[in-house]
View 1 (cartoon, rainbow, N blue to C red):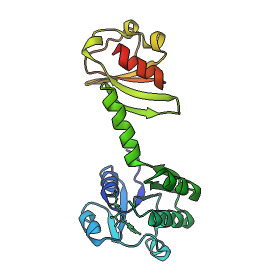
View 2 (view 1 turned 180 degrees about the vertical axis):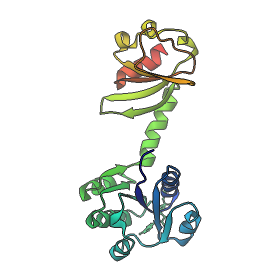
View 3 (view 1 turned 60 degrees about the vertical axis):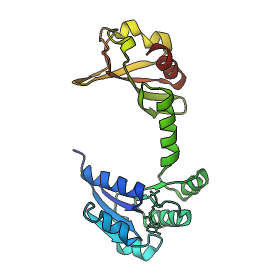
View 4 (view 1 turned 135 degrees about the horizontal axis):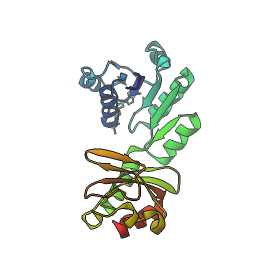
Length: 220
Ligand code: ADP
């Protein structure tokens, strides 16, 4: 198991509380900070530490020893000013990795200028993800490797069940490659041409986005 990392999560709203709970369940230490006492109370049994504090106050962050944390996440919601201020202070204090949630592109741009290491747009990204999944029913999940290249998880339909990879031949027909097949009982990494696809297996496919789209809509 990966070694335990110390995280500070600032803002325990829907996003911050779900993030900090999951980090704790994954075995990491989490300090949760919120200026709302009720939010802190709700999380106090779940997190390693939780405190009522204003994260835009430099002295407060200093006294909590936030600079010694490996990673701090600014999960403040609609108070953009507070989110920016907290991010500036965390960077100034020298926290190794600062992650912040952005509400709008403009908010994201400011966070980028401050030097925030990773900016996330939960609502925007989830909207994009769900749109892809609605349009492509066989698409379980995907990771964008670059602007053009993607890794996607595609479910094997009844239509192509029983075919070998040679018979399906996505590389010659669509230019994308199957790099793994996840069968419920086992995972085949780097499958060969003779491996047989069964219904509900999950293919891990790498290729250009348009190639994977064509493969998904025409072949599966
Ligand atoms: P979400 O969309 O994730 O639910 P919210 O806006 O509801 O986001 O939650 C953000 C949390 O951040 C709230 O619980 C709020 O009390 C907290 N918060 C806002 N400003 C500060 C601040 N300056 N210091 C600490 N916590 C803050």
